Length: 320
Image 1 (cartoon, rainbow, N blue to C red):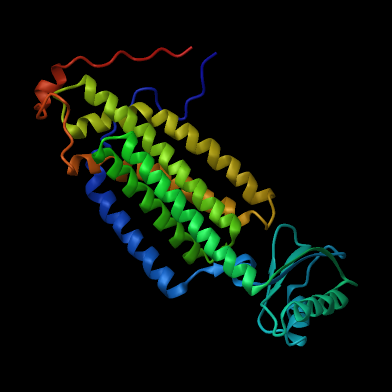
Image 2 (image 1 turned 90 degrees about the vertical axis):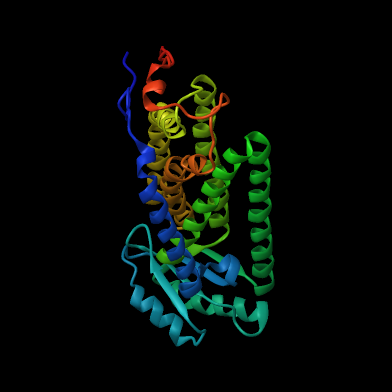
């Protein structure tokens, strides 16, 4: 039976010729990410900002968001955020920390429950105090920093320093664009978003390692081939695997976005973005850095194109 292929079996695309466009493009996206983070900030969820979220389902089958917002404002509890999600009958109601601590927060929840229970089913109530949210911010930040440091340490020992630098820059690029994605889209940033960032680091690292491993293998075989040609050959060799991996993960995440509900929506959307930027950076950010760092094969300087073409090409691996 013939295997399904999402990419042609033999490709010879010149990816490295696009590096003069990919680097300015990525630099522009990185600057936009920093500016939006400074100007717009992050939409911190209840986990980090503190407050209460109530998940409601209308008994009539249609949630009236304007009415829910009016109920919240009539109680004088400050800014109330009401959003619909999933089905037309589902909605979330959020409000911040109330003066008076825990008892005041619980009293407000009771008032809202009394006002809405006739027309709505209360499906979930989450209350996070300011002290707990502050601890979550510190723990989440520390977890991200430690994990990134561990990844960088692994890369440094796993590859030669030029390869490690390329993988490190690609990983930082993906993290920066993910932060910009949260800032631009104003998706809720909560503890599941931290999990998404850590997962994106792992995915980006995996893609970079696959490409770098193949480049190092080609370098050992072709002693006189130019660096750009070696990288193009390596990327083309792993391209079917890269496309297949990215497509299957993207489709699984799309299913989570459509049917997973509001709780994991920010995680799923961030991961979809991470799959795109992780695949892009492994080809157009990580690999071309080897050219600028002057990586050559073990035998010395690169050959001319005519000399490189005379070298034997590797035998194509047979698939069962």
